[in-house]
Image (cartoon, helix red, strand yellow):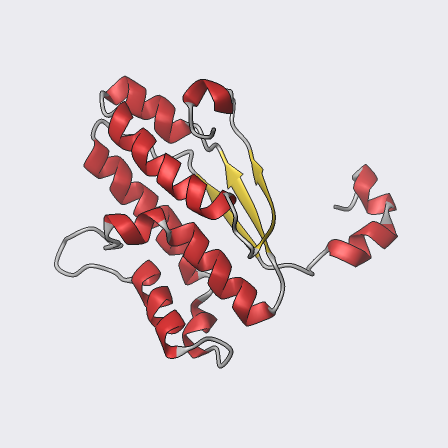
Length: 169
């Protein structure tokens, strides 16, 4: 933050910088002409973010079952199939699962940074698969943002109004 006004707030920076696990994803690339292609890209974005935390496979803090949950987030297909092979249920709960595993490993709540949350919905509207994408995004966001005891806070950025997209109640 050098050169920015926030850098002058040294106490604030000391208190928060590097103190929380952070999940950071951008959905700017989840825009294709079909739902399967957009879903595959969403799996790729979340799967690659999960791979940043590959140390969770060796975490002694996590149970064997929790390490298996992590493997489902990072599972890669074989023979020319999609890179990440999450089921619909695993994908819908992926950010909740990742936040739970990180919180358990670190013993600290997680910060979620979600950039361009609205691009998949905008592209789905243009591509004719809006209802399918809206259903998936609702499940994904609802699970990670509502009643998630592992979340310290989340920041969503986008240019469309959340209420306009009916993503949340």
